[in-house]
Image (cartoon, rainbow, N blue to C red; front, side):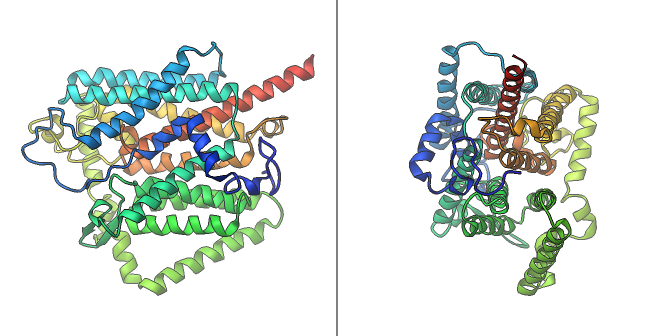
Length: 462
């Protein structure tokens, strides 16, 4: 791992990455790499928790100003990317990154074909087109950073900056329009964020990046600790169990990796364990064990809790449908509510809440296999590059072990959280865009590392 005070890419010390750069540097970063703008979502200042009006036919497209705004942002970013691609000189990026991106386009094609037999073909072809536009943005970004690699750690901080901006907007809106961000349930109030800020993805991104920054002294420890605690508290307030479990797993991996770098391994692990025990005891003392259990279990009995709040029943119903219909139901056949008499209703599938099974349900077994290959190949590529220390020692290589580790931890969170969240595969969702931005960062870093290592080897053999 890089140590505190080392330079990363542009010669600046790591401790000066975030704040000394100033707001103008983030504006330049967004203008230089507008793919980051997709992480905004963009925010929708209307309630997402109101029922769909009965007079709206879900099969027909219906629009409002917010929907137009949501579609306009990715369309503009993709138009800019397509324009740049039209005038770029042909280059050959390394095969591993190229193969993963190729699989993503194959998956997009499968989604587009499945729109033909979707209950909402007109609406869903629009979703498939948005998926294609997203991949155009990723392709342009990958070619751009391959030619001129950025400071990757600052790029990761740029992603956190956007998440912090959304989180700040959520906190500003909350006192005036709480219905935009929270819902009331039988076991308490849930801070979900609505269309402003998806707490289950935005807050973990802030927490993971801040934890990496704290452990590796990339900025003020007080600042990174504040960001970590604020985002973690907000995630706990969401009472989103899957997100909380996923974040805990990621933080455990981060703690182990940090403990392994340097001396006093046993002492570091003991410190982590003692801190975890003290924090758990503090929470129990403040709220009481019964209230904590009710919040964690959502006031459910053991059977409902183990059944994933009814998710397992829905997954079984979907698997049965997929056995009978290997091509699926059609892309995003259930964006808001089941079509009356449609396949979701016929097989009593009311909700999936699983990204992998969502792909299976809408486009069949082949699409699920392609999607799984994309994720697994991305993990394998990032892991192989992270474990080849020779890549990280290449002169003028802006990729550091910290930036790659941080990005892989973000991807690990997305990988795990999809087990109970289907929005990672549906356009116009923040989790969808953030996941593909993370994939683009991993592919870009890997391509830059492979290229730099190849150039260094070529110079040595001449």
